[in-house]
Length: 127
Image 1 (cartoon, rainbow, N blue to C red):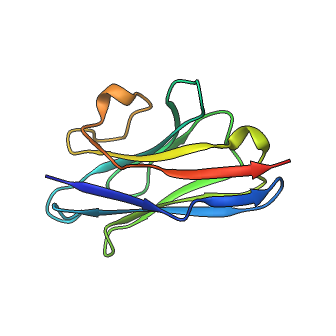
Image 2: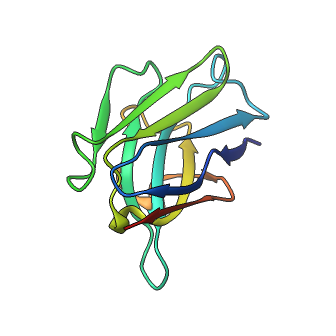
């Protein structure tokens, strides 16, 4: 069983930067490769895809709304995936969730494809 714990959320002004992290435990990255992803959910909205990264970290994908502003990365020695968010906008305000799955080889933008989820971390961007 994999547990995911997000951290690093907070309040930031529009145009600012923030980095959120997701630490995995209960199944190391090394023995059980995990494709990882970030999703977000704003109040009253469905959970939406933000970014994904494969096990080795050489394949990433982003939602059009964050391309060029957000960067997903991972440190398999630390069992952690990161989302660096730059040039933040008010519309980026949401709860950000980390997701993982062992069966995906290249990640996926679909909620239904991920088995493990974190509890979420709030990111609020003030305009």
